[in-house]
Structures are given as C-alpha cells and as structure tokens.
Length: 214
Ligand SMILES: CCCCCCCC/C=C\CCCCCCCC(=O)OC[C@H](COP(=O)(O)OP(=O)(O)OC[C@H]1O[C@@H](n2ccc(N)nc2=O)[C@H](O)[C@@H]1O)OC(=O)CCCCCCC/C=C\CCCCCCCC
Ligand SMILES: O=P([O-])([O-])O[C@@H]1[C@@H](O)[C@H](O)[C@@H](O)[C@H](O)[C@@H]1O
Ligand SMILES: [Mg+2]
Ligand SMILES: [Mg+2]
Image 1 (cartoon, rainbow, N blue to C red):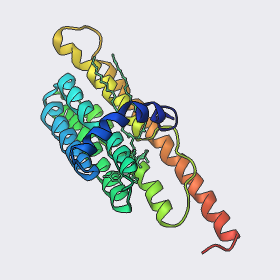
Image 2 (image 1 turned 120 degrees about the vertical axis):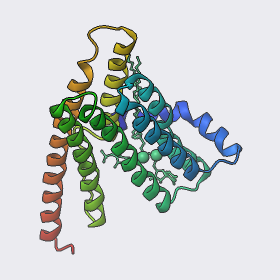
Image 3 (image 1 turned 135 degrees about the vertical axis):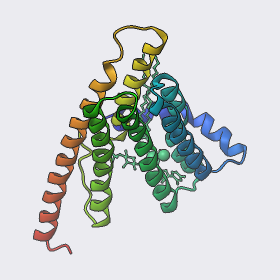
Image 4 (image 1 turned 45 degrees about the vertical axis):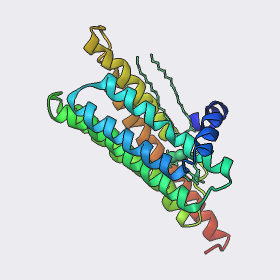
C-alpha cells in the first residue's frame, strides 16, 4: 500500500538530493552499502540496550537510502540487475538487524520471552514474505499480489512505535505499550501476507501448467 501511494511523494522529495549525490560522484551501490551499514549499526547498538528513541532516529536517517539508491540509479540510467540484487539482499540484512536488535532486548534486560518470540517471528516471517516473491519470480511466475504488509509497512509500523515508545526514557508516560502492539501487528500481518502470496503463486503455477508453460 505504501509502496503504491507514498513512493511517488518520496520520489519527488528525494530526487534533488539523489541528483546532488550523483554530482558529487557518489554511486548508487555506495548509498546502498552505507545505508545498510548505518541501519544495522543503529539497530544493533541501540535496540539491545532498550534505547529505542535514538535507535529509531539513527535507523530512520539511514533507511531512507533505500529510496535514494534506486532513484540515483534511474536518474543516472544505470539501473542494473546487480543493483537490484544488491539492494534486495541488503534489505534483508537491515531487516534482520532491526528485528534481531529488538529480540535481543527482550531476551536480555527487557526480560519478556513472549515479546522475544514475537520479534523473532517478525524477523523470520518478513524474510519469508520477501522470499515468496523472489522464488516465484525465479520460477517465471509474477506473484501478482503484494499483500497486506510489505517491507515499507513492516518498517513504518515498527519504527514509529519504537520511536514513540522510546520517549518513555524521557519521562513521557503511557507510550511503552506501543512497541509490543506493533510487533504483534507486524507478526500477524506478515503471516497473512505469506499466505496471500503463497495462494497467489499456487494459482499462477497451476494456470501456467494448464496453459502448457514450462
Ligand atoms: C510521532 C510519530 C511521528 C511519526 C511520523 C512517521 C512518518 C512516517 C514517515 C515516513 C514514511 C515513509 C514511508 C516510505 C514508504 C515508501 C514506499 C516505498 O517506496 O517503499 C519501498 C522502498 C524502496 O524499495 P526499493 O529499494 O525496491 O526501491 P528503489 O527505488 O531503491 O529501486 C530499486 C531498483 O533500483 C535499482 N538499483 C538500486 C540500488 C542500486 N545500488 N542499484 C540499482 O540499480 C535496481 O533497478 C532496483 O531494482 O523503501 C523502503 O522499503 C524503505 C521504507 C522506508 C521506511 C521508513 C521508515 C521510517 C518510518 C518512521 C520513522 C519514524 C520515527 C519516529 C520517531 C518518533 C519520535 C517521536
Ligand atoms: O517483498 P517485501 O519484502 O514485502 O518488499 C520488498 C519490496 O517492497 C522492495 O521493493 C524490494 O527491494 C525488497 O527486496 C522487498 O522484496
Ligand atoms: Mg532501494
Ligand atoms: Mg530496497
């Protein structure tokens, strides 16, 4: 949904910045790599210590690189299969660090086994959501449904909740429940998305076989 409705807005806003980076000689691959490194560092330095506010701010600053790298490649006319592979692969790394960092907090000082399980479930199911599409496409099937909770939704729900919950450290009351709620929403939403994509690919596979496509 966000991919469909918010992408045009962010493309307009980020295009001048992407053009500036190109003028400075920065490559899209460098932006992909630096953005991932910053997101991973923000997640693994701050989240396991329960510093959700600063973790979210750091990750948010770097994660927008995922919108900038493709924008740069398109402006430069250098979009490539390698770039697409690098972008998607490193997205998985950043996602693992974000939900892994939250799981580490709940497994340690956060001391909540159930929420640790929820965070691990978000990590695993998010990777499976992405895998369903990648594997379908490798088999020549389009996987035409994106589903309820794509990556942008998983990140926005989790990061908004983590950022606001982190204000608890500064004395803001009644905000810490937001992160647990977000984790359950993302967990259930990702499960629904996996099922939506699996059913779609099943139908597409049977239709392709009936039509005699190998
Ligand atoms: C009080 C609370 C306030 C809260 C405010 C919250 C506001 C929310 C703010 C922002 C919402 C942001 C939504 C963004 C949605 C955008 C949707 C979207 O586009 O999603 C997908 C993208 C990128 O996808 P992808 O990488 O596939 O696209 P590219 O454009 O890069 O194209 C890929 C192709 O490009 C080529 N290529 C790429 C790279 C390369 N090296 N070479 C290449 O050739 C190749 O052809 C590729 O195929 O974006 C995402 O998935 C990222 C989502 C970002 C999510 C932001 C999360 C931040 C949210 C909230 C933070 C709130 C902080 C609150 C703090 C609270 C304090 C009180
Ligand atoms: O499939 P998903 O994880 O919800 O969503 C993601 C897409 O929105 C994104 O464009 C792509 O670069 C990622 O690798 C990933 O596939
Ligand atoms: Mg990108
Ligand atoms: Mg990406």
